[in-house]
Image: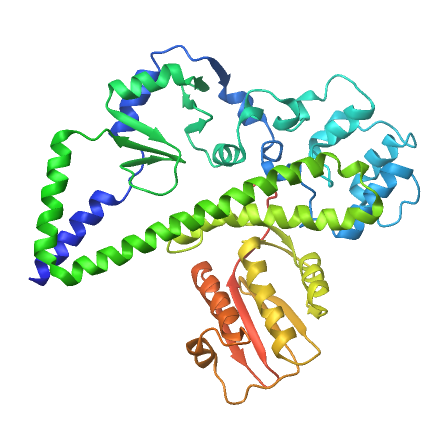
Amino acid sequence: MRLILLLCSLICYGMASPVLAGPLADRLAGELVRQVPEQALPLDEVQRLDRRLIAPDSLYPAWQRYPLRQLQAIYRYQQECGTEKDLPAEWLPLLQALCGQGATPSTRWFAAHPIYPLGGSSAARWLARYPTAGLNHLLHVRERRDLLGQLGDDNLDALLRGERWLLQSGQLWLLADGQWRRYGAGQWQPLAERLGMTLDSRVDGPCQERIGGICINERPTLHWQWLALASTFGFILLLGWASWQRWRLLRERRVALQMLTHELRTPIMALSGISEELRHDFDRLPPSAQQSVGQLLGSVARLHQLAQASRHYLAAETLEDERVAVSLTEWLTLACERHSATFCLEREMTLALPFYWLDLALDNLLRNASQHGRAPVRICASWQAGRLILAVSDGGELPNYRLATLLRRGARADGLGLGLAIVRHLLRRLGGRLTLSGPPTTFTLTLPCQLWSDPES
């Protein structure tokens, strides 16, 4: 009986789980390449572009790379051409030239510094004041408003990941024969209908084949409907009332999750639109409102990143977040400023880290130390044998508690157990671990990582 139940479960799982590009996608691609696309873009033109000139995040201020005081100094200087204090040295040639106090930067300089710290491309900043030829190829795709600039943020991210299929506003993009080919709805939809398939950009729900962010399903037929009905009836008889109840509860949870996901993404999209308008007017805001607007833009960008990363977080066994270059000194300085803490570092270094998730874990530890521990709160950071070690300590004492005990207690009224459970869960999926020692109370975060050696990798 147990063997029968196991086989039925495996069959149902195989029918419901999506697969990568397969026969359906190949059939559709074979028909599309015979059609003349509405527009085509050679692949080598896309490959010649700097990835940062495609990434949607490049349009926002570089909060993670530069401290707020430097961003404020850049804004003040470009408005008043005053003191050069706190200005990043690498941006002095452009800032001085914009103020008429230095030589015009060369095209090679713009190519080496494509993204302006306050968001957008460096070329766009220069062309806004000194329209000249020869820099248009260094504009961000959104600033050029060309074929690529019509793609949404999700599709631009998919393009950077190397996807071959994109679906944007009813238009289907296919990478074939060394070029990106764009087909209108009047071209690809009749082909898909004739082949007996449907295309959708939804994230959840049944999916026979998934190609990037596109889901391909065969159109239901009468034969399939009768087969599904017979299979469902046999499944109910075989597993009994208990299994039926379990299936019903799982279905309710899935519907609730879909509703929550939909309701969460709607306000995020609205906030993204508002933040985009604020970003365009950022230079005209009064200095008194600039810091608040900057924090708002950073929070909206973080919400957008959370919505994107949560899909991988819920679906994968391990988090597959892109590793980025992180300066330990700058990161720890910003983290300590948020929680009135201090830090010690053996030596400055730049590591390749999953910054979003690691910053979330460290923020939870610092919040726990500030709210439930005693001052002073301190971070000791080191990198040993390919592992980043962050020890967060405070003046409190937990002589009668172990980490497992705190986690078993779950979310206490003061929120201590829940924060630690989040940190341990994140680190486990990133391949790291969390330990507790003391007194004084010290939570040690350990994560495998490497030194950042190639900024273009």
